Image (cartoon, rainbow, N blue to C red; front, side):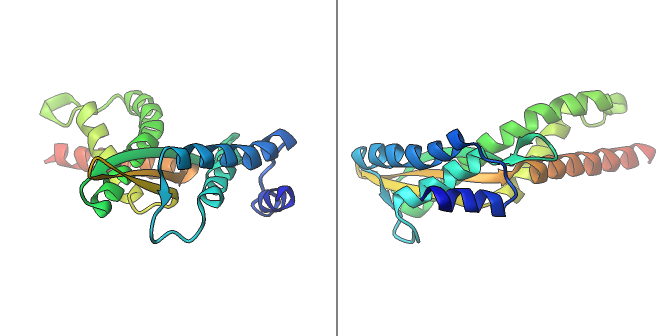
Length: 192
């Protein structure tokens, strides 16, 4: 198993320390036992067992982008309950995406403040602009990958726990591009 994790990391061009390799092997075992004890099962449409899904989660958490010296992926874990399994899955994804978005939007706020905004002449405020960018990013991120998803039945409802990921560089670029497009649109509207 250690060789598989190491080979995966090398193929993806990621530097992985021995300690990180160990955590990718040990943490999923512990987490899988804990989730099973809490009553979670793999979703009916899952392709991999619980431990294998969690190995994907932990492998993605330790990957670093060498060019950016940042995590390669942003992670979000969402938990939601509903009478419908499908609705609980959707709600859990939305919560996971919100966590990922928060990791992108907090630094974006400082970038937006750097631009100074365009709050003159009754135009869009920085907060409104940030909300527009966040909503566009959320719509796009909702189609991002789910690394692991589990469910349990509790009190007549389905409880779903989803682990979602999105590329840090892609998320940051997307947010910046959306912001610049919105800023340009506002500037154009002010001309008329």
